[in-house]
Amino acid sequence: MKRNTFFGFAAPSIVLMILLMFIPLLMAIWLGMQFMTFTNINEPQFVGLRNYVDVLSDGRFWQSFRFTLLYMVLAIPAQMLIGFTVALLLDQVSSFARGVYLSIFLLPFIIVPVVGTIMFKQLFEASGPITYLYQTLLGTKFRYTELSVKTLIVLHGIWYVTPFALVTYFAGLQTLAQDLLEAASIDGASRWQKIRNIIIPHVRSLTIFILLFSLMDSYRLFDSVFVLSEMNPIYKADTVMTYTFQTAVTVQRLGKANAMAILTVIGIMIVLIPNLIQSYREQIAER
Amino acid sequence: MDKIKSPLGRTAIHIALILFAIYSMFPFYWTTLQSFKTLKDANAHTQILFHANMG
Image 1: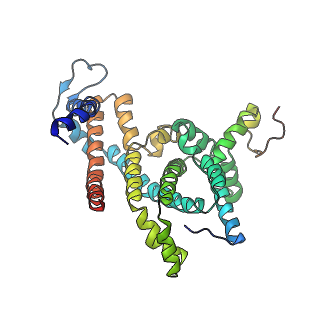
Image 2 (image 1 turned 135 degrees about the vertical axis):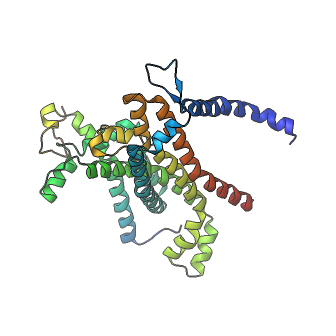
């Protein structure tokens, strides 16, 4: 393809990306270097990198960063493991049953996040069934503490995002060449050996895709924390996004919030770019 | 993958899938159930999982 033709086709996307991604990013970098509140929003004061220094020396920022990392470490493997296991089970049933099960399994993922979180929270209210079960089994009342709120946020994350991993893995299983499995059966491979040596390598690229998507999604974790912790600092359950929101809206340090947003983007890039490069190389090698 | 043919195995798969369906759907079920209750019943500490009188 000629270069001019390529740019002719790509121009609308490039213009949109510049307008919707690069310009806002540059503005956020510029705003991150200003001392700006809602009162001096029209006359911000240039402070250079002071906002970045403030963020990096802010204990609450690091606390929220640690909880975001903890959420990633706990929720993402659980989502992927449960999603893969259920996809394997779903592959075993008839197409009619698959349709019924899939439509139920997708419910948590298709609902508006805030509404889903409120529904989930109701189970743990004073009159909720899980609270009742907790009290009956353990003999103590379920209380909202730092540990319980953080646990609820992780459990909600698993409940809410597992359908995404499930559907992706299930779609991947449908593209698996049956002759490979038949050949393995003839060679006497057990079911576990087929899973380990054929299915897991087959869905490897999907696993990377789910991992990257989940990492990005975890960085953006907001709704569930907003509803489950009610932004109460006593639970120390802030994530990077909720703390950025609080810094901008409650504390009115708009420049510092922009600096946090830029640092978050850099954090996401550090995680994503090596994986994206590796994934790109693998796809080129497969061709 | 080749299908499990034993009735016991197939039953176990369906039980596992039904349990996961209950796990996925329970918050929706509970919210729907609460929407049919009076405020007093909805806030009661002893809850009922099935509501006989929906009218």
